[in-house]
Length: 364
Image (cartoon, rainbow, N blue to C red):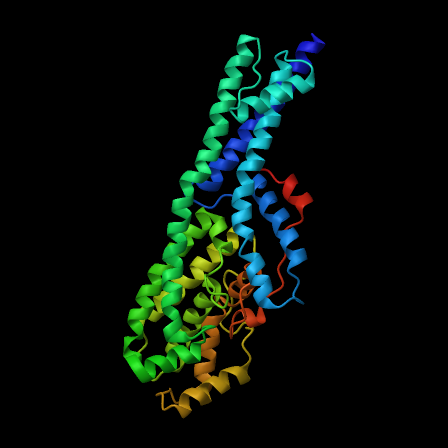
């Protein structure tokens, strides 16, 4: 009786490992919403820790960027390896519980099944059925990643197309002052509404894709000095300056763009458990200093941009918009190791991943 109870417990433990691993894979790539996945999080944080050791701040940014470009591809390759290893361990426990002995034989049987090599197979009929199930799961987990790679790169391409289109308008790295002056000189400030409409769509797309497939957050831009985070910060700041400073009727499109932007960034921050004030006061402190704002004001004034008469009110209005995304844009800049850009990653907040021991203790 005791032997039966032990075998049953080991079988159930192995089955639990397999079920948890399969659910982890499904949540990571198939579930169309952000969901905490302990196994995937441990893989991400472990590999990120290794990359942090070889990319200290003392190294030139170009070197750090080149190394970090490999971070996400290595994670995506490592995930199926971890999944298959855990599935193999789980099925080895179940084979052993069904009478495949010794333990080395159970491990060999499980390895042959999950890899579909087939150099060894069990003799007992229940174990044979189990080996078929393991082989199907092994193929399915690898196929899952391969089938979702086109989806991942399609979302990445959509994101980077719009980020690349910002470069002629805002420079590299993107700057709110450059973006405003480019429109002032070339396009006309009245055409900014077209930009806000386009970026509303971009923020909605990024929120959906970057919370459903978190790996997209860490994919770096093709150009070392471009980043989706700094591009988002530039657009949000430019929209806030448009509303607060320019002598023109308030733009509903600019307001909606800011709203779409900070909602999207907060959703991504929620997924990575980045803390922020969800309902900040309009007069809460921000990272932009008043003298920085004054320099921007004088620069725009020098270039004959029509500004509002009350600079004090303009500063309060700008700060009231900025406070909604100030914390998250700085924290995401650190999380993604974004290149230096004015008013965003140049004042990034300290951020570190949750310790692995704590992550491992969390439930799926």
